[in-house]
Structures are given as structure tokens and as C-alpha cells.
Length: 292
Image (cartoon, rainbow, N blue to C red; front, side, top):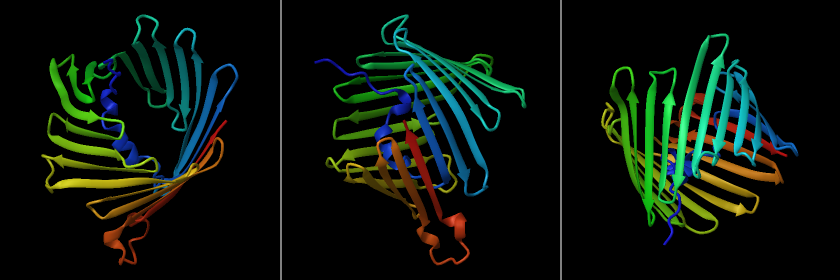
């Protein structure tokens, strides 16, 4: 039986994370516009107004894809004067191998970064090696192996100058078409997380995540559960609640092909009777996406 390529390390537990984190625009109002030219040049303009600080931030990005030569070039510029450049080369040196160089430059602060990544994917194997050239330099590697739905992953970072392993983590999981379970040991195995995702039916999804931090002074386990229901082919609602009593609701509607609106509301159920709780306790936001 042929084996599929397993997810990357960062995508272990992605189904549960997407269910609990995406489509809840509660931090402010955001707008994103994407366009694509016939010559495979994609443009993206995005901005967000933070309701807490009233600050408006944004960025503009252009991406060119040369499918024939497996080359992708991306250039971005933010309102904080940060220049982002990314160059990707895939399946040219070897099948399943992708090279990625991502750089940032802030001329005003004279800060810069350059991260070189090599990703190799084959059936039952997904591995990645990253070198942060200006920080350390630091070498980070992660690998996920999978067979018959079972997944095993590990990550470690090594500081070249100090000659020491600065971070390590591990994970195990099981993935099936209708559900997925993932256990993580993060932060040098000081934080443990368990998550699950279940596609109950074609219209209903459910999931949860529990996190235990051994270094936390408060102790206990933080728990979050959520669900997603499709109302029709163009709309869905989401809801989640955590053990701190914060209830978050989300509604997404496709207004027309390429146009999507999302609305979010967060309510601290433990502070409903506080007349002065205001915005600090409860949040509301919206997100609009245009794709042409």
C-alpha cells in the first residue's frame, strides 16, 4: 500500500488549530484584496485597524510564479517599512526538494534577517532544515514520518556559536479522513498539548485542545472546545469556548465568487455583570476579502 506524504512539523494538528483559530476576526477590522494577472503575477494588499490601539497597519505584496522552472519570487513591503523578500525553488535539484530563502530588511532600524530552508518530501517522510544566518547562526531541523495514519515528529534547534541545543520538541498523532488526534511536547518538553478534530458530517466539524504548562504558576490545564456548522454552500458559523469563560462566535458569508465577509464576537462570560468591563472584556471585529 502506497503511503502519502505526511504533514510538516508545523502542520501537525492543523485541522484542530484551524477550527479553533481561523475565521474569528475579533481584534479589529481587516481588509484583504488579491488579484492575479495572466502572466502569473499575484498582488495582495492587506490592512487591519486594531480596535485596542486604533492603529492601522498594512502591507503590499507581489508574487511571481514560474511553474516551468519551479521558481517563486515574492516581494513585500509593510507600513512599518519592513521589506520582505522570498525566493523558492522546488523540484529542480531533486524531486521532492524545495529550497527557500526568506529575508527581511528594515532600513530605518538597520535590522535584517535571512533564513535559508531546505524541505524534502517523500511518501512517509516530511523533513525540513533551517539556518537563521544572522541569529546565532541557529540551525533548526524537524522531521515527520508517517505510516498507515500514524504520525511521529520531532524538532530541535542548535546554536552554532554556543555549541548547544537550545530547543527541542516532539509529537505523535493519528490522522484519518474523518478525524485526527495529536499530542505535542513543546518547549523542551515543558508544555504538553493534546488536540483532536472530528468531521462529524459533511456540514458539522468539532474539535478541542488542552494545554498543560509545567512551568505555569497557576497550574491546571487550559481547555478550549469549538465547532463549525455550514448553513449552506456559501455560509458557515463557528463557536468556541475556553475554561476561562471566554465565548467566541464567528460568521462567514461568501457574498459572491471571490468576495467573502467574516464577523467575530468575543464575550467574557465571567464579566457580563460588570458595567465597566467594556471593550477590555468583550471584542468585536470584521474581515473582508476580495479575490479576483
